[in-house]
Length: 253
Image (tube, helix red, strand yellow):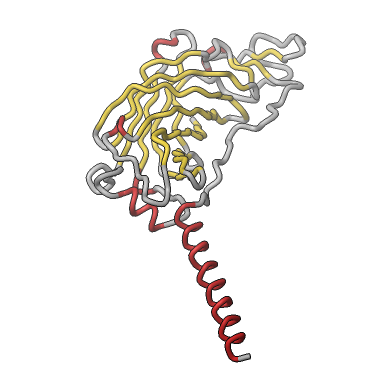
């Protein structure tokens, strides 16, 4: 009887220890951050409004159903939005994510301190420009120990390189005239600088003008080696060499 009690007690202790180990393992290797969308999945279609690129052209609009409006912008949709042309500033709701896939899970890291601007010139697309800066020290994967590990010198080295930058060199897919609420497929080429190393990358995704805001969702894939980083695999966990970088930007004038 005594031996039976000892066996039961040992089994109970083993279960508790196993649960604790799994809890720690899951906390260190599991994903705790969901990537949030800024573009509605079903943009408004009925009554969507075509918006002139230039605010100086009387904000001329035309309803999607073809119903005529006066050239001065009177009628349906008039005054709904100023022209899209001009300077837009990245807002505080904007985020950048990067994702690392391991043998355990795909882990998302959120960076929520994003600054920058987007200058749109519909008449001369070559004059459309954009740049952005991300505070890498704002990185959050939902596990501070993991974040600290990725911040070290052999990885992001945030002590020496606290910011990452992206300077756009060209856009493809931007419309000459924007229709409010309609998403456009875009390709954005530019120079991404991380850890002091610059690489040309192409972000692909969608942009939409909606209720006075300009929104962008786009992604690209890079590798650890592109920016002089080691692959952070361990003896118990493999890590793919690719990282997916996601932009979730909300801009305002």
